[in-house]
Length: 184
Image 1: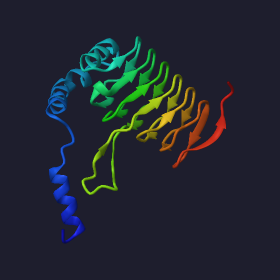
Image 2 (image 1 turned 90 degrees about the vertical axis):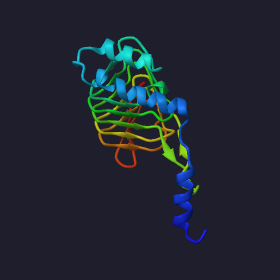
Image 3 (image 1 turned 180 degrees about the vertical axis):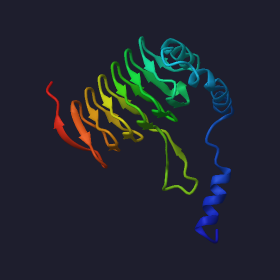
Image 4 (image 1 turned 90 degrees about the horizontal axis):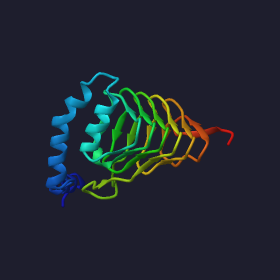
């Protein structure tokens, strides 16, 4: 080890982030993706079925828009009557749970993956994300790894939630800060 950069490059080359089964499943999901993304908007049931085939746990009457981007659906659970809007990103390297009647609006990003910056190999971390029942992740908001958004909480448009959001709280900004509490 002569330079820090040499250590990082060597460690990264030796790192293995996924086993063969997960890699094969990702290839299959990629091959099936056009059958999800190219469907007309009203074919909610078809997209629910495809997600379930790939291991997602999807409740009744869930609406996932065809332009939503989902990585590793087997790490995804969506409760009944929830919605995932146009262009939303569910980066489910780790578990993502979306509660019943919750909404993930257009272009929101749920990121259940990170890297351990303290290690030279930048090991993959996959802390879970939980979105509570009747919560709303507004347009273009970002919810980071390991964050729990409580029931009925609202993460405002373009807000960045890197810490847990208490039930019934409305947060905005970067970093997200509470601006009010909803009545129970």
